[in-house]
Length: 68
Image (cartoon, rainbow, N blue to C red; front, side, top):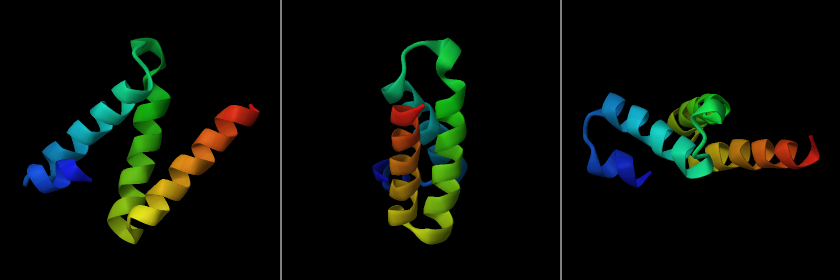
C-alpha cells in the first residue's frame, strides 16, 4: 500500500508491488509465477473492494498452501 502512496503512476506502482510481493515470498525464479498471479488478484481486489478483501485473499492462499 505504501508503494501506491509513494509512486504516483498507477501502472508502475502495480508492477513494482507485484514484483516486490513475489520476491518477498520466494527467491527461486522458477516458482515466482504463482506469486505474481496471486498478487494480481490481490491488486484487483484491493482496487475494487479495499484492503480487507486483498488481505482475505492472501489468507486463503496461505491456508491452501498449508493444506495442499
